[in-house]
Length: 416
Figure 1: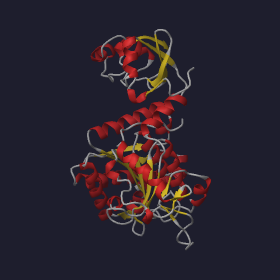
Figure 2 (figure 1 turned 90 degrees about the vertical axis):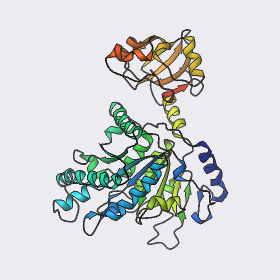
Figure 3 (figure 1 turned 90 degrees about the horizontal axis):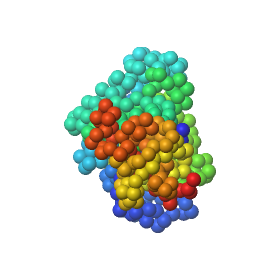
Figure 4 (figure 1 turned 120 degrees about the vertical axis):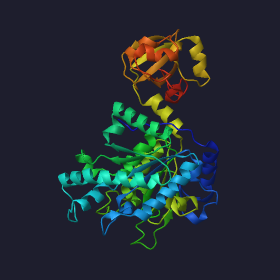
């Protein structure tokens, strides 16, 4: 399944300001110098939802195979500053295998699959403890989420993963996500948390994804071998030329390289999420970005809300139809959600989260949406107030049969 764009309100004033700045210093489609950017570049704290990706090479001391406690403590300070300002923060953290292999005394070099899985089993416990302690110093609760690619690609598991992250953010916790290397097979050899972070970012409708690396962004060539390499501060379109600039193998501790970061950017920007590549080696790396430190911004031409509605409108095959009354039709046209009380009939068989058509009694197509109940449940609750859902179904479900964030109204797609 193609990764689903999601929605989270974005500061539209900030986004408008961001896009007005870009053409000022472009050469072709690429801004060539960070120093040439205006002072008022995008501000991380002005976004509502931020995903931070932390790699093993930053979190773990390569020589000793141990956690860099001072570095993690400084990053936790950065997170606490954003968190105190009302920003939702999600962390995608590598490091479990790197920590676990040290505990198990495994030698340097490439690990066999079973060695990687054993290292992950030991390291995940240690990694979760370190994040809990670091964030706990700032009275922030950390919640561990272990995922595999199927959790962001299979519809049912996707919905469950998204709901879990959303609930943690709702209660002001910081989800710490990692690939579940203990049970992964192919993923453990070829997976990377750059692309996982991009999938998580689009899944939850993040405004911006920050990838911390051992380099301050994308260059036209490897800067350590080519003195003529130029830093790219802003990339507003990922072209074959941009993809060709990304290269270089990953380190023993880190499975990701610049190529995977550009691939992650393609996932992020297609879902309406901006992405930043920044040098994370120093203390307080997030604060460094906020203070104007050099980095590379990959700009999305959309927003999470718009990308999600486009996806709903054009990328999904409807599984059924909801017929609604005139009052519900007027409510939809004004931007409201569809409540069960306004539905008069259910046609077809569908599951929770499937796409459905929404029509009025005359058959006129009003929109497409993702339904919050399966067809059997929907038939039991239509025409009834939302407060009666628990009594009718035996559990407390959502109030809306189609939430407005999961709805694309007619006019945004070609009628069937």
